Length: 96
Image (cartoon, rainbow, N blue to C red; front, side, top):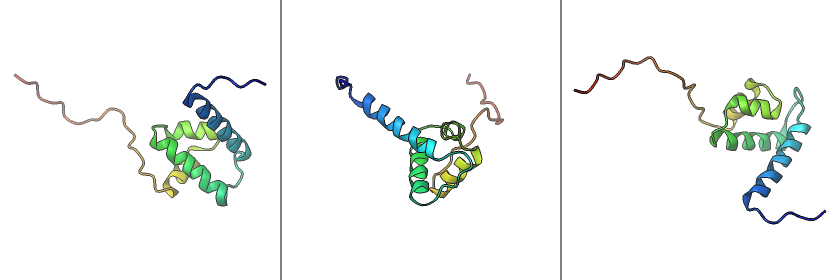
């Protein structure tokens, strides 16, 4: 098969997502993740979370539970973001 012309980062991102999909396939839901596979998964989750992905999105992507992903991020010493949403503080006084 002929190789596509070089398109910069797109191909490397595509290749990376294929590799991650293979990792996710080998880590079936409910299977125990230990040793180097756990360290690699934790590093991948940390990188994606710190790039802006939500815990729910990571859980869906990996086929794992929210709690599992949350625990992996905590084990990887990630500072978790706040929940966000509307705040219930006082409204700022209008400026004259």
